[in-house]
Image (tube, rainbow, N blue to C red):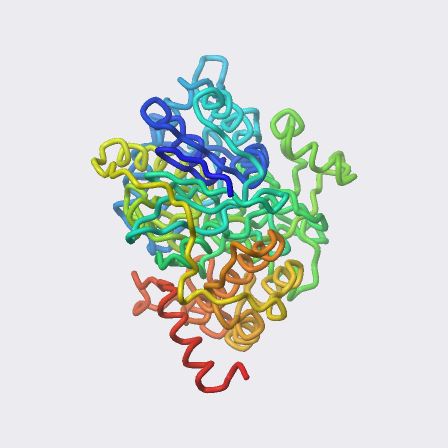
Length: 526
């Protein structure tokens, strides 16, 4: 079994992982491992931009309030302050590193407006290709300073003396490598890929959350899954129509050309994503309508939105008609690995940053274009914490892995195939949820153990196990929150309840496994 050592191991090649690598590379030996190439990350696909209070009429305090309102005040306010106060600094740093953000002729930034924002504060590059421009710049900066190992799927954390000292990885040929490090950073993205209708790139299966969960690290807020209102309808995988299109004047209309967001929210088509998505769901599933994004009023659409233009042309959509067919789909996950404001988890030696982390910054619903900002802000915070840490104890080489007593052989017959998991999540745990359907999904997804001996399994089985783990955790978290808040909507509990304010649903392997043990003893699995 091959072994590789580093000071810092980073799992994930999106904005959070690559920025952390850049900050650390001058002082530490850093290895980044990715499932595919960095160009396949969700950060690379991000169209909208980076939100930052740059305009003289704007302020971090206004950005703060917009973030809290979009998150239905489920946010951690200290985390939000840290996020929004760093906006200007993030844009300045990325500019210095070589990202060419779009500017007016006088040199000032072109600032877009997206859902939930009361000001124009979205900095973008290449029109609707911000993620691509940022990731290309970061790759060029770290390429010669950091070892990037592509096509490595992180399977499980290596724990020694109650500390994380690395991970087991598998490549596409099912060869196992031990990646050992003094510090490990999880930056592997979210879990919207457990849904069939999603904007996410292939591989967003929540695998890093699954690893953390199996190691006893706490997860939280998994019921909060953001559904983006405007995915290109009828496409698999679904392409994203950036919110910036509505910021430029795009209007949502039904089959008869009637706008339907006018009386729903003061911001109309630029209302927060949870509100717009629920309204689209109603239009499509209750009224039987098709929904379109009317772009006829946007001058120079192809120049302003080259990425969307290419997406539509590849789908044989005639933009001259001024209508793009859209429908909502899973886009971003607010839940994740519980961390502090520097990215530290409850396990020594382990950090989590970006979408896989749950700092509480997004609350119950993420504000548009706060995702790239989050990745950048907490990458810097984690790097600063690691560089200032005196915890540099030397571990001996981890030569042999012992099977833990509580690890069980995986029951292949209980595992669902990926497509079945996605269909089940779309049907029973989507935009509108209820107890009966969630219980049905939970029963279908539940396994006899959530901590099997995975390293011996082929990669295809490991991926299915991770998807089913996170799907079950998401569904059961949805069941536990008996209210509607932000992106979580229960038809049987349709209102937001005061007694749920600030309450988090935290998931722990030890608690969940004890419930499974009780069921087994009672013969429920027999």
